[in-house]
Amino acid sequence: MLNMANPKLMLATGLAGLAFALALLGMTGGVSSNIQAGHASLAASHFGALSGSHVPGLIALGSSAAAFVVSWRHRSYVVAGLLIGAGILYALHLGPLLGNHSVVVIIGPLTGLLFGHLILALGVAKAIASARIPVPKTA
Image (tube, rainbow, N blue to C red; front, top):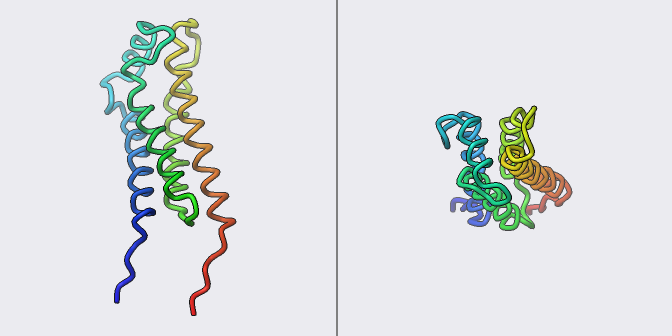
């Protein structure tokens, strides 16, 4: 009889993969055609509130948190790696936008940078938890 994969880990891997795909699209400019101009102008036009440029980041953050929760008591270095990769990609592509901008424009990139660091923290926590969970012994 074939071993079936754990459905919770499959769901968690899919959710973490979604977060990574959104981070990769944001990094390459797939979410918006011009990431710097689009993100900065939307953030400047919606001071103090989340704009449309934050939707992919919110989806990625939500799917990362869901992947972390679903895979809570399971070892999964794949989920941890995808979450760490997504967090790094978000932090890398939004970091340069924090350069010499006004306070109004910083709100957008700063929010995205926060999303990236939160996703990175979830990935690191998942990696540490996966390393600490003992491997079940089979007879």
